[in-house]
Amino acid sequence: MPSPAPRELLVVDGYNVIYKSARYLARMDETSDGDPFEQARDLLVADVAAYAKGRYEPVIVFDAAGNLSPERPNLSKAGVRMVFSPAGESADTVIERLVTEARLAPQAVTVVTSDRTIRATVGGVPVTRVSSDVLVADVNALATEYSRENEARQTQHMRLEDRIDPAAREKLWKILRG
Image (cartoon, rainbow, N blue to C red; front, side, top):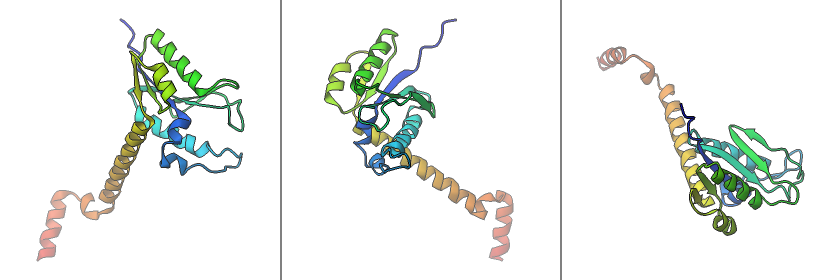
């Protein structure tokens, strides 16, 4: 029995997306260890996990060159692999390497960035290029949908009328109407 084809690789240019969205920029702040990107990265990881759910093998690449701690280990959170470029190497180079490895596998790849150089370098079959703005819009739509559904669930469970058996509810209405 042949093994199933690998899920499509989703490679996200982390800081490029963060700088494209007020959603992430609002989370930029000094934390206890002095890393202003920590909360923005955590939100991006959560958003990419929700976006990729079941369809993609998600990887977010961050440029560690300007970070306070450039020797960050690569790790996974919420099923999203986070890769920090090593000292002396840009995130662009890491993204290009991931795309080349996927092509050789062969594995379909979607690259999310608005960086023109990366978009030009990684283009071609089987690579799909998506701008950071499109990912941000899709994530915002997912967040809005989740909030709406959560609010509907909260409202539904708060009303006594919705928690009573329909037959009992009808009897109560008849009593109240006299």
